[in-house]
Each structure stands twice: as structure tokens, then as C-alpha cells.
Length: 247
Image 1 (cartoon, rainbow, N blue to C red):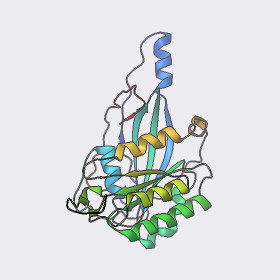
Image 2: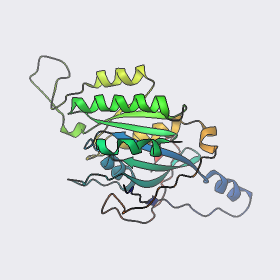
Image 3: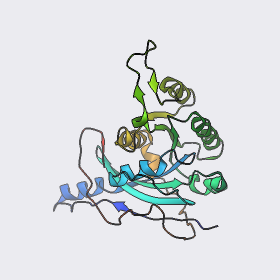
């Protein structure tokens, strides 16, 4: 079975100034590599989340990922540059057996479900259980409920917080995340809501010593690249001093 990969690095670093100050700045800009894997049921929007984070775009009717797709993105968090090496895995059950190859040695994982599909949260829980049993014991796991743009409030409802289209209540998913020590977010890959927050909080959560520790180099046999239509190329790292991930 062919596995697929593609690297899209959207980053550039400004040249250091002359003298000691420039040397320090250059040292600060040396990126810390963070391997991150996305897991979840098919069609919950994993690839769309990555596309929104890396390229600030959304594509309707995206083709399913085959095997996995690989992208990278750099962002600055306070005085550090984080390079996310993102493995976007296929959600179809027939690719489940490949998942350990992608989450092995990962420092972070985003487990995605669809807030309009209750069964997708059950699948997300099974992924969390697998990660906590088999992945890096220090892995940072974020639970992301995607597609909140499809949820609409019911104005005349007598019950508080009732929303049409939603099958996974926010408080239910949040309580689960708190119980198992997960970061929790609700996102809209289509509109961009909450997407950058996912990666910002993950970057904040990973200890610096884990970012600096060497990882075995992962080699995946080639196939045809996935995430069709994603351009190759470089883009700037936006600077920032407020502690946010300016990607």
C-alpha cells in the first residue's frame, strides 16, 4: 500500500544583524521542531484544519487523504520559532493500521471530531485511548470539535444553549477533555475560528526540553503527493510579542 507525503514549508527568517545582538537574534530564531499528528474519523475536517493553518485557505469538497499528507509550518511564540511537522492521517478505517507509524515519536496530536456528528466523538475517544496507551508518554493531545460554522442557535428555545445541528454538546466534550488531561477547542476550518489557537496552545504546552531532544528521523516510502492543489513555496513568519503563535 502506498503512503503519501508532501512538504510545504511556509516560513522565512530575517537575516541577523551584525554584531553580538544579531547573533543572539539568529540563535533565537533557530526553530524547535515539533512533530504533530492529526487523527480522527473520515470527513471531520482534519485536512481542512491543516490547510487553514498552513495556507489560510479553505477548499470545499476536499478529496479524502490517502495514507497521510505531510506539511510544515513555522510560527513564532514569544522568543521562539516553532516548526510544526504535521502528519495529516487518513480517517478511513482501512488506514487505521498505518497510524502508529505517524504518531510514533510525535510530541503533539490533534484529535478531531465533528460537532454535528455524535459518532465522531466516540471515534475520537478511541484515538485518545490509543495515543495514551501507545504513543510518547509526554505527548500533548488536543481535542478539537470542528465544523462549528454548521451550528446555529435556536432563538425561541426555552432551554439554554440549545443549537440546531449540534450533536455533541460543548460541555460534554469539554468535561471529557478535562477528565483525560487534554487541551480542548471548538473550531471552524471554513471560517478559521479557533484554528490558530489549537497550535498556539500546543506550542505553549510542550516543554522546551522536549522540543530540543533529538528524534529518530522518520522515513515514509513515497507515493503520490496528497492535499491536491496545495502550492509549494515559502512565506514569512509574522513576528509577535504577545505570546500568541503568529503563523
